[in-house]
Amino acid sequence: MARDFTDLMNQLKDQKIDQFEVGPDEFQAFQKAYMAFDTRKRVIGQAHKDGKLIYRYDHDTGDQS
Image (cartoon, one colour):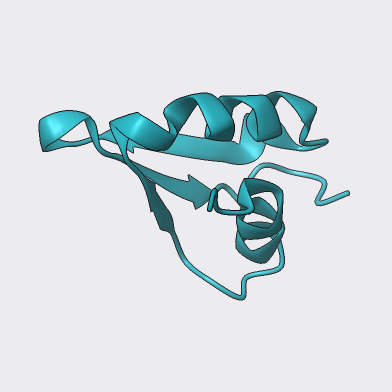
């Protein structure tokens, strides 16, 4: 079953989690949720070995609306 990436991004935004990982096999599902996320420009990804991505939320960019 696919993970709920919208929920994970909301948890990042609400500071309930610090980060989450997306594997290459999950990227298409993540990308669909990411493109629909209202504050997606604050969701920052960092690439790691084997195609894994670690996503964090940037809370330090001015207005937090």
